[in-house]
Each structure stands twice: as structure tokens, then as C-alpha cells.
Length: 314
Image (cartoon, rainbow, N blue to C red; front, side, top):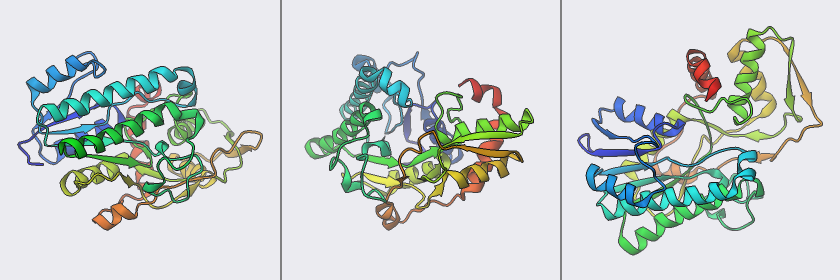
């Protein structure tokens, strides 16, 4: 990408899209194109094509998607698969038809089988059944990356697909009911601190292992790939390290400054024992995560405190 290129970030209000925009601005890119949902309905093919015809972007970051937790996936399966299929198809097809030089499609580690080998290699895709609770979203994401591959094979369109591990950072979802484990835990520990609660309750035994990548670190990897990767194969992006939920709770307490006790409710489920991405392919290209986990948590907590009311209501 050149600094004069017109770069469209689809999904700029989400955690990833916002981080991409921050990085592009910091790197001196002047022509960053964004549209709100009110300005552009990505599920409407005619509207998307009209946008491409007028805006003429050179590069596209496709980070727009309908997202949600287990409850949302189970309650609105048609919307999760249907909306995401339409968004991806319209943005990818429109990019090809209007001369976009390169498109980066952001996938999700949920595309991999529920019982994939650990760490999860890219070639485990479609080898075993998916996790049933988020299969609607996963199937849509798989279709998106396959669409990128198909347009490359048939039309020579330069589209790449990236599968990140669990992300966290500024603009994350801190909703008390819908947040993922890390922002939900940050919210809980912060609330316990300011309300002087003597203890907090955590689910399960704390033994499951999880991998977390700060969104700004991940965007550094995306920028690297936009400059250095032009292949059909999907590529994982992660940190290559794991932390147990129990150690995560202890570290979160240190970062937040909460000295209360932790009560582990072992009647609640632990979830998947382990979920780590294999990052060999990315490492061989020459990129590795550089942000330490504690540094990332401190950075995220600082943002959270500055934006507490907004984050809590998001």
C-alpha cells in the first residue's frame, strides 16, 4: 500500500476496524474511507456497488460482521448466517468488480473444528464438525474465505484471509451479559474494586487454557500481510502462548488493583480445555506478536477507565 492509496475499512466502528483506522492514521495514510450502517447497508448489493463506483478504493479491509455470543447465535441463527453471507459477498464481489488492488478478509478461529488438534493448524479446516453453539457464524466465515479463494482462482483477484485468535483491547464489548471472557472479567474485577466487594466469583476450575492477542498487535500483523502476503492459503495470527483462566484472573486482579478473594464455582462448566492457534506460517513470513500480555492488559484497562460509561453501555 502507498500512502496516497484510498483504503476502505468496512466495520470501522468495531474493535478491529477501529484499531485498523488508528494504525492507518498513525502511519500517515490520508485517504481512509469509512461508512456507518446508516450511510451504507452492506447487506444491500446495489448500495455497495454504488459506493465502490463512487469511492474507488484501492485496498479494502473487510472487518464488518454481525457478531455475538452463544445466546445470540442460538436465538438468531438465520441472521448470523444470512447477514454475514450477504455482507461478505457484496463487499468481496464489489471490490473485484470495481478494480480494488487487494482485499483482506478477517475471519475467526471459530471456523476450525470443535475437536481440532492443538495448536490448531490452518489445514484442520473442514476436517471435523464445528462447535454447534456458533456454527451459523462459523459457516458464514468459512464461506467468506472460500469466496476469496474462488475469486483468486477464477478472476485473479488478490484477496487474502486471516484467522485471528481471541482478541481484546480498546473498543471491546464490555456488556455484562454479552462480553467474552477477558472484558467480562475486567468489568467484574473493576466493579468489585470500586464497590469494595470482599470477593468475586469465577466459573469452573480455572484450568482451561486460552490465547489472547491485543487488537493493536494483531493490526500490526494485518499491515504486514497487506504488504507481504499474496497467497490463497488462509493464515492464522496469534501470540503462540497460552494462559490458564486461573492465572488470567490473578493477573487481572494485579492490573486492576483488586485485593479481594476469588471463589471458584466448580458447578459451572469450564468450556473447551484448550484453544490455541498454530502460528508457524506467520512466523516463517517474518512476523511475530510483540506486545506482552500484561502490557496489553494495562493498556486496555487504561482505555476502559477513561471510557467506562461508554464501554459499559456498548
